[in-house]
Image (cartoon, rainbow, N blue to C red; front, side, top):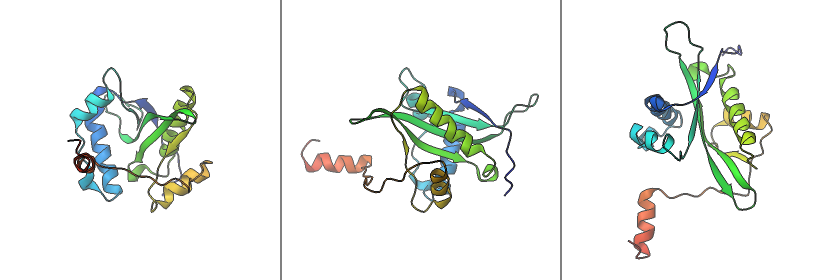
Length: 173
């Protein structure tokens, strides 16, 4: 793969980008070997990301416009604020994804650095994300950028059906 940098424009996503965002999310799910897990919709993305109080923000990476041609979308980053009881406001990078044919050309680094800039701009005390344990290229990339891998914190989660089971088990629904 060429290490030549790709001309790349970063911009905040707009409402009219929801179908593109959803397509990128589905591409990411394929890459992560879990395409069946995507249940999000364009309607949800529109409501949750572009209303009065957005729950997330998206940065799109794309080619510069040439004449009437639409730019080529290379990838995206989706982030949101979380709150640490110890630190305060933090920025959580939920996903960063670059289409395979554009990897190794500086696009992912530009997206990552833009998220770091957002963290600084919003006075966040921590910039955090998670990476799958088998994704060695990403792990190596983050370490090369100065990130620390936490070993003492284990992620836990419950999907909506598991929340329902928990509440039923405790007679709360």
